[in-house]
Length: 379
Length: 82
Image 1: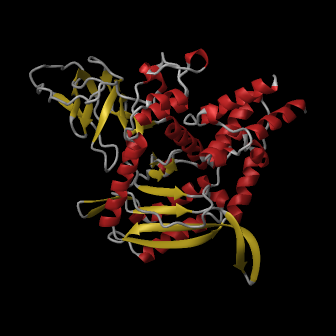
Image 2: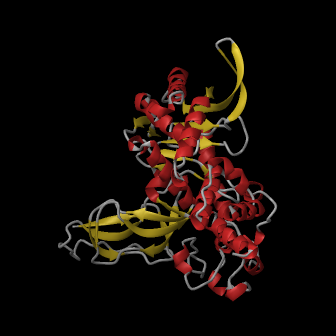
Image 3: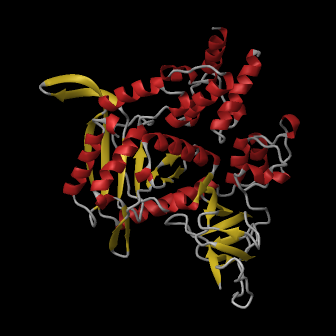
């Protein structure tokens, strides 16, 4: 009995992706969770995983082919030894990309024989230029950014533009469909910052923690007792999620924005969150994420801490039901017990879906996050 | 290591951390943050890379001393002389 392995969705507004590379061949044994292919999307090159275990029977799509979400990519025999041909449906005709160039990719191995600077590669990708055909004028024939700019004789829409279109569609849908409500609270961050400075001073540099990590952990702990903010709203029904896949909005140089999730954050210690966040950011920068990270986020944190703003009113990423905004941790006047002094303060905001939760539970959720941050040693 | 070698090594570490930055476009005197949206995670990754490449301890309070290419070259030279 054969199972069709289909192109997974990599986010609410993705319609298709281009197959770049197969990581499997007929006869290979695969198990659930294995990375089986690399596809190219508006969000960069994405590793896609398989959801079934079995034996690869046949690959239905060749590299450089654009494939719609849900269209079959390969046939997998459920039992490793039971490969048959009788149950195999005819592979549907899939349109190859109209342009003659090979599918562009940001994965370095794909053009290993061309010497090219990473920025030039990114630019070539954005401009949809075949780097094999670009003459390199740099030292040792390296293709430079200037070479790519020169090769771009006529303007084409860039990847950044199409990513902006995807973000625009998701945000417009969110504002059209989701009745947002907004709450915010100021958090005295002095306990967390003092604890963090002392802790980081004792640790080797690789294990030092950014101020956002205790916040990630506090959000996870608060979600365990306020489940109305972690899950999906689909088909007029809210489905809370037991797993906490915490999306983190990461800005890309050049104007893109990507929201991959820290998968199963509910089980992660501060040290694990530190390592996994760094790994996630590094893979965003290199353009290597996987499909689950892009499609399974259950709630999002967006931090503008590096942007210098005090607070923000974020837009929910559908089908999620809540997003938390964090401003800059900044020294401000803080009144407490009849006295005013200067303390590092973080303004946290919450935008949540009023079909699922209300101001009272939202206030409770924010208050719990705030309380956890007053005792960072217990996080 | 000459000042030039040092600078090109640091430039390579920078583009390892931020592969989307063109090394030819980096201005030595301007802070990375102001040139190409270097965020706090990039800054930490860059400090880790410098620490590993030159085997020098970098306390958290010194991160601002790595803010631009020139500052970074000066910092590593100073540390290596100590």
